[in-house]
Image (cartoon, one colour):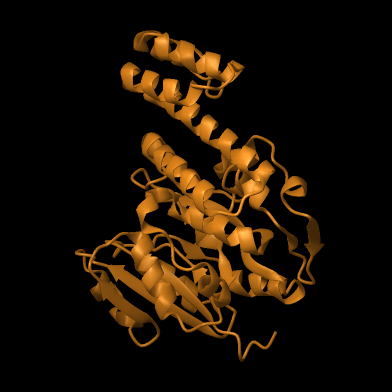
Length: 338
């Protein structure tokens, strides 16, 4: 791969991230890959983001637009990008210096890949607290789905990086494990699959990555190449579970109607929708028993009774004070659905 020819455009959607955007931009400009374009899309910020980026004005492309959400900002950035490859970065996260070079090394030896992602670190105001977070962060991996099951091939690159690659859609339908701020893909992929669906809320990334996986092989550099910032207010925090689950179910139903799925994939998707509905009912039981019961009924109609459905049903019937008492007595992860 000719490093003088292949340009990577890093797209950073930003909304009121003046206190963090400089670190993100600086991490892009410090990449060891020599041909970089940094595209910052300011999604109607009101906090001085533009002023914070003035020191970088000659080294980045700055685009300001009315507020429309991160997916609309990212779509505009991808449309305006001029590179042969496109990378995503969130305004509060940080690339490791060699991130893009190490991902391009996998593209170099596996030219059929459409997209390459990676492991990542987790950090907060105290510093990095988890050096390898991929399996911890994504429940489908934490529950035991292995890279051997997900990918068809593994490879160790000349630089020592351990990588995996193959067709991943079947596994992706069981749950997401591709961390969006780590992805790097060919511009031809964006041209082929189109923009992100802005109507799917926090599940737009999952639908988009699944759409890519329908058509392309995907690679993983199993090394932490990104520092992912954890904060209480972000959309992935536990308090947003029910809302995120509803968007994920909406995305799955959209995929069911629009993706060319075979019988196995349709069955995997149906199972995932049922699991999301039951899990949502379990979470809703903490706030509203009636809402939880409605969600449970929607999930269970026409389905066989399982151990999980029984556990969820009894949690819904259990008074809230009993649930709080049980949680106070048992350590984390020993509540068995309660």
